[in-house]
Picture 1 (cartoon, rainbow, N blue to C red):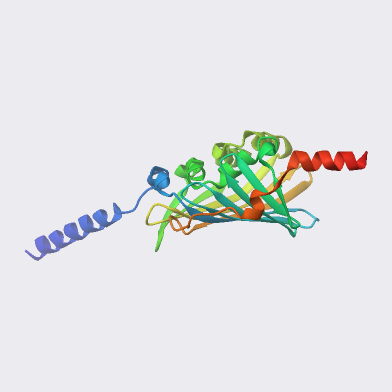
Picture 2 (tube, rainbow, N blue to C red):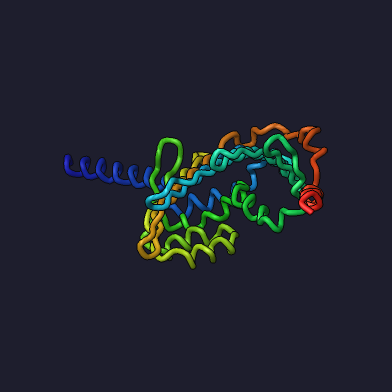
Length: 251
């Protein structure tokens, strides 16, 4: 009788543990739910920091803070090597302030490949670019899931970057780099939303090498107020007029 009771208890506890285990999602499920719910995020704030440190040289750092409202108007604050710039993007219009002067860069958006760069910061499009994490290691944490993608070679890194949509940069990278190693970590909260993404990799070609670090955070999801373009920005001079004036002055 005792053995029968113990056996029942053991069987019940095993089934209970199995049921609890089923609550955990695989990395493929985490990414699938994240991408499926991405369209629900209509406004957000993102902080993006990229640091490239070639061996024996000073590190190059770029920081971008961006707010996007429900109408998809974006406000960016950029800091590259101490040079700061504020940018407003609304549809096909792009206005930038640098050194106290507002410039209308709308005509240069395609030439400067800005569309592609902004797409990489767009929440929904960025979520869709994370398919490589379906093969990552999944770990359940207090606030959701942590996915770790190990980069053993160039093929792994290419797979990670391939969905970014920026084919020109990827092609350039493939020509310049021979070896890559490192890891990328994606944190997804309980609402199937991106919390953060960190990349730490070593790139090398021959005797030359560089460390690449990327840190992206998403906050204020669906909590960003309407972004209004300042009146002084609306009076910005077109870049082609500024260039034409500079050319005439030089002549």
